[in-house]
Image 1 (cartoon, rainbow, N blue to C red):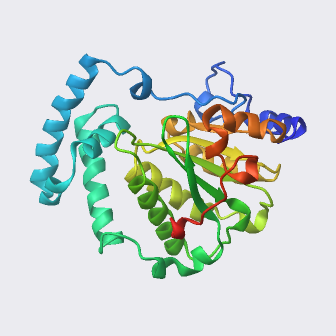
Image 2 (image 1 turned 90 degrees about the vertical axis):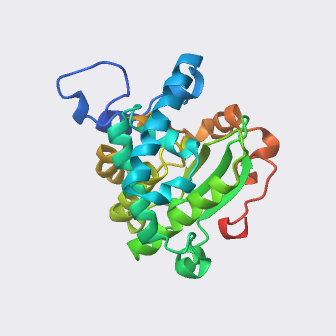
Length: 279
């Protein structure tokens, strides 16, 4: 993104500074720096916090298993992610988790999404998975300029298919992934607000605490119209993980988190892109 576009975003959405105002919650700040914040559970974990989490996981498990016995087959790490997404509030996390279980049974009754269910979406060749960042988080790359407004249901299934794929590729010590949203060639024909909001809902409500960072690259000025519509629906934790990258700093910014031999070749790295359905 050029400095001109950066100024346009900042003028339209705010500059992302810490200055507070009465209407701050209604403003749409454009992330001005290239370092996303990380949530407190990533880097500031301690023995006391871990003990509190373990205790609350046990309480939450008892509550959700009573309401839905299928929760017995799920591990503590998953329950803990829902707890963290609701700041360790057991009641809120339990409600969120039960809604997830109900969604999963309804939307993914066979346990996974088959490529045959999303053949139209896969044909656009817009989602790829390749490499890991410096701490072992797998990388997903999506090309917004290849997305077309079509069936929201099938797009949701593509999102679910992709998230299941990336979660399955995570090393045992990792729970999060890194995403690159490449908007080169993005225009009004790609401005599928309903689809974007549906995808955001799946990510935040059904795969909480899975996103580590989201780099948004090659951002055209006209994207800010869609961004303004989407931004209010992004939760505060997710907002802190979003990085808008200037074109001239693209490779340097990605290399802070991703080694050259793990970076996609289209960004100056050494790995060729691999379509998500071939992973």
